[in-house]
Image (cartoon, rainbow, N blue to C red):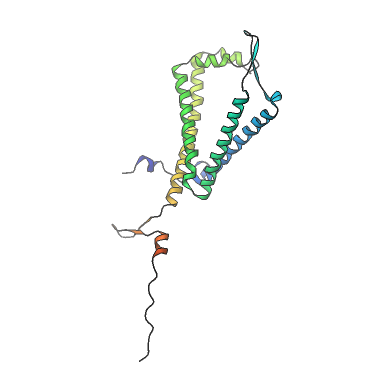
Length: 225
């Protein structure tokens, strides 16, 4: 009986490319995104007057910094860690080191869980969509038109959007997992070779075991009588 893990296992992913190639492309794409975010954060730390955003409160008549220096430093550290994790996944898929792919896979699981919690919170508390729209700035395009829409329609649209994102993220998780299984299988020390007979299976030794076998002594030299 085929297990569910083996049933969904495949060495190809989107665009008919190999799972190793897909994981490398995905790791490079995440590295580029986090590199852009890191550049923006470093620019904001270098010139805080130009990049600092304020949230005005008419009731209190004061300004609150949305991101202070401490939060900027935390976001910068997170971007650096993400670049490191994505680089490890890219290197692990390229050099076929399965252990290097695990941190990126764990990040994908964590990100998927957070998006799932967002979908659950929208279902449990549907009024949060309206509350979020009210917090948007007045210059946000079509804000009034969106807020005038029925709340149930907004909830359905948000759930449909989040569902599409979750489906896409789940597919990417499957691609990275298949790459990990492929690399782990290639790095295995044992290879099964099935002989053409009906019920015979031969287990070949690994390359290291073959090298470790001592050479046979040469036959004695032929001596003429």
